[in-house]
Image (cartoon, rainbow, N blue to C red; front, side, top):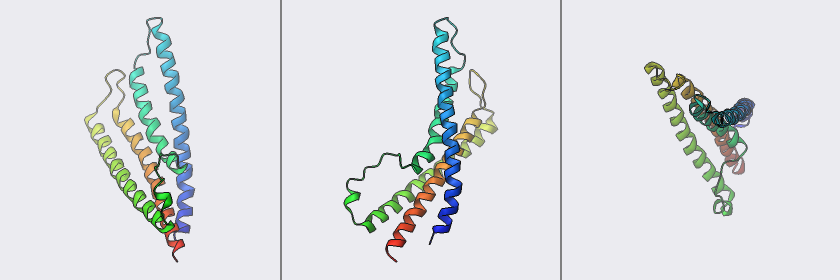
Length: 168
């Protein structure tokens, strides 16, 4: 039923989340480098100026850009010892309900982060030390959340397809 839609969505969602994951890996490397330079500089009384801000922003990007990839790889923690004992139809129903709830929550969160980015842009908010516009990070976070929402939508459609296929 949803096979064509799922196939098209997979061809979009997987590459987008793979790119986001690579960006997250690069950000993690840069955070490690910043921390190393900052700690090493402290030995010579020259810590890296703005390291705290940069690692904070990096952590935000690392988290938001890894969520979708982790969802697609089924890397999020699940407690399924009870659900695994249910009949297949009940398992499919539970998956649909769970994915629908999470898709709704992530979609609302994405929208709120976009609105916050707009408010930060209009308010011209910047960081204290480096003067980095905060809306840039909020915008990038909303992109990561959007990719996560797409991954959840894909998983929801797969669950619905499984539920329909089993009971035709």
